[in-house]
Picture (cartoon, rainbow, N blue to C red):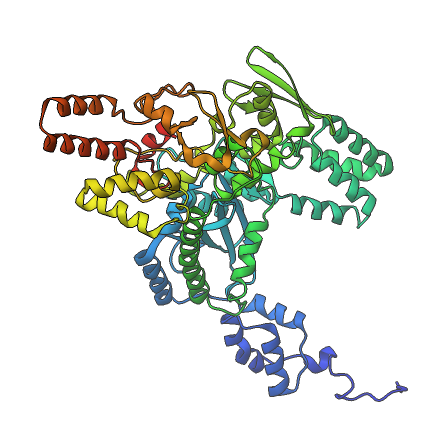
Length: 626
């Protein structure tokens, strides 16, 4: 047959007759396949050596004939010994060629036991030359950030290997610790393994993966995707049913797909039906972000020994970053535009939790609280018409926000306002308190925590503080009289470094001119006279609540009982002054001066307010006086 075009090797380069390899050439390529080299390198080697343009499909066919054998036995033992000497490891399968390799450091184990309520788990690919999958397990700390607590290399995503990962995670938990929720993608093997290893644990499907699956099934029909997303995010059952009816009417085939695949598990992805504790983790974005950071350093051609060591060094960096973030968060207090008791409530929380509660405080105006019925109050949102029931004894709510975070929601705050309940007395989850950041990990033996309050205000007089130091060191009565005179002008700011009392004293009530109009006046609880806030240096404050004039407090001997907490204002010195005056009338003048000096010193000790200090005490004692 005669062709109308040239037929030679240069034109028909990819014809099977010209790119077929001989047996000798195949044997020479065998080391490339056993070491799992990249496909483009194998193709370039064949082109440069023999001038043959083999295709990617040819390389894949030859890989089936020459499978990858994995790491040598010596390298496996070296890798396992490295992990055992630096942390904890879990191996499933015989060495060499193990199926699952799970590892974590001691610091990661402490983070897992401290924040094990909500766990996110996801798998990424192309991280090593063996083709193993990297599974990463994350928790959410009290600052709202994801922290990786375990890594696992798997040969495949089947049920048995996910069981091994779950057992390794269960072995890292202390006795009595159990996760409340797992956030996963819709992988049937992982969900079934979690149900077996952690029975009773709630499962939440990542909303991003749900929307991606819906978009793929809807063939990028934007109207179907928008209606489904509205159904997923709504908090009203009527709105959810309306969106589903629209989807069934517009596309019966798509509606049948939803009835078959997604509606039987709607409590895993629909906001209205979701009652699981999530702490805001309804997607795997935190895990995907950790994957992205790791893939900056992990590459597809890396051997497993190197690919496993990089996450190990990253694990140490995770623990250090968490410790630094906690230290920075404890040094910062944010002043919100709220009243006094609400500010006290926010001061007890971490920065992340305080922002969530402050956001709820701004929405209280649109909430209407009904009358008290037994122990419950029914609230309704005037904009969305969503109602919720608040238990005013346990201070719990039936809304989705409280179920997700266990923090005071808008309905709880509105109910507290309606019955004139103090905001700073609302119960708070231990996880979101600032004290929990400072508390040691469950695996350590230390039983106390350091409580650091707000940093003291800027001192007004360097000379005044020098005199206070002289009183502390030398107990000079003459200097003590000068200090008492200066204290009347400097106010409570002069007492920020005075340490006369050894008892843990709560910081006094803070009132500034920027507070709400109800707090712009200080009213004495004894005489009833009110003074502007700018003259607050004339006031003494109860350790917990109410202010009073210095002169009124002196007249009553500093032992005035607070009408709220039923506690003394300060240590009384009235009896001591009376005894000193009696001694002065019956003794000579030198003894009179000595007793009066002792009275002055006792007076200084009785007025030693310590608004800002660090106290070492256990959590139980802190909760008793806070």
